[in-house]
View 1 (cartoon, helix red, strand yellow):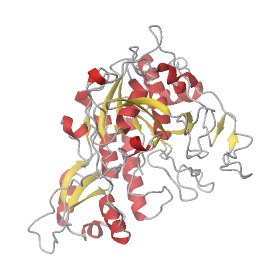
View 2 (tube, helix red, strand yellow):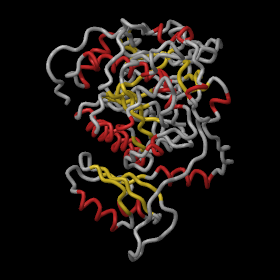
View 3 (tube, rainbow, N blue to C red):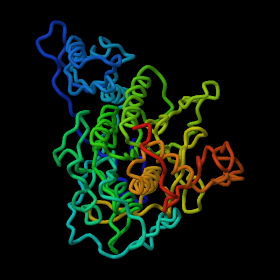
Amino acid sequence: MSLLARPLRAAVCAVLLLSGCLVAGPAAAGESGCAHGRALRYVVTFDRGTPEAAARAEIEDACGTTTVYYPQIAVAVATSGDPGFGGRIGLDRAFSAQAERLAAQRADVKPQPVRATLPATDPAKVPAADLSGQQWDMRMIGAAHGPDSPAGRRDVVVGVLDSGIDPAHPDLTGALDRGDSAGCLTGAPDRSPSAWAPTTSVHGTHVAGIIAAADDGHGVTGVAPGVSVASVKVIDDRGYADPEAAVCGLMWAAARHMRLTNSSFFVNPWTLSCIRGHDRGVVREVLARAVEYSTSAGTLNVAAATNEAVDLTPSARSGARGPGNGCEALPAGLRDVVAVSAVGPDRVKAGYSSYGLGVIDVTAPGGEAGGCVLSTVPGGYAPLCGTSMAAPHVTGALALLASAAPEAGPRQLRRTLEAGAAPMACPADYDLTGDGLQDAYCAGYEGYNGFYGHGLVTVPAPAAPAGGPDPAR
């Protein structure tokens, strides 16, 4: 499951993971030895500096068609109907999430989920009551709202890499940057509204509301209600975030000079993070290149730690960020990404939240059953729980920092965020089920540990970063 939300009610859950379609282009035609079956998408890596013409030629020779090539990171998205395409390119360089899922389906056929559609948002019918009293999460992180509270600047754009943002929701319509919005499901950005609007999932609208819902006395209010959010659709109607979509989203955010992105998902096709092999290496490589490039271009990326309750601690032997016990969340586990765990209303790590010393940077409210995070959904408001909800609290806090310090780059923003977090010690007893056994082990000390990183994000943020432009720009 790539959507990192744990819905409070089955009715909400039903719209999060629904069937969709595979978008692919035609296979190369008329080439000797090329088969012509179902066209599937692939991500393909090349040596850095490879010219676009050379990349396209190699893909064509392998019986594929190039959808898009990102020369900055030497990564292409291609389609092919030939099952041998990946082998011709090299299994250490080409990967298809679609092919992986098809193989899994043949091995274990499961019934297709029931399709659902989102209710159309009629602004006149969205509840107008002030729901701020139910926003325990905002009070926990010190997000005070009102005329004298920091709200952020509209020229600070946050890319919400997710399932789409409802453009008609009254709490979001003023914050939504339509010009910077794009759909990335094919691996290439599509700026048409139909490509970036939500279709069957409330997830992206919920995440966007936590960041930037209007402070207007109606509904809910986001952490940074004065900033802008761009809908960058990377999650399809079944809840999948494929690597080509994630790469497209990160590269689009960098190209549009967005200050921040929020990734409340992990990259599919796997249902667990604890996977290794050549395919995993390709996916990690393309995402790492995209994150590295976007960071160098001035975009700071925030990601949810996943809801798998697994230990993401890197291997002690390598001393580097990466899978230690075989588990790694992507993109949250990448070096330049701010990884966020979740706490419930009791300020204790939520049972579902993944964790890991050297991976988790900060923590934020994600909620637990009976105390989820209330935010915007098409047609109104709903509570959801998950690290999906924790991450945008951090992104909102960073958006306020970016508003206060226009020249600050990713490294300065990150340092200031971590310095302003409220330290949280490891729990003395983490027996959530009451069976006498510890449900997870927290390594580290109060100032930095595997459950909470540097601590609980705080808003209003501390003093803005000082100094000139960030060297990461």
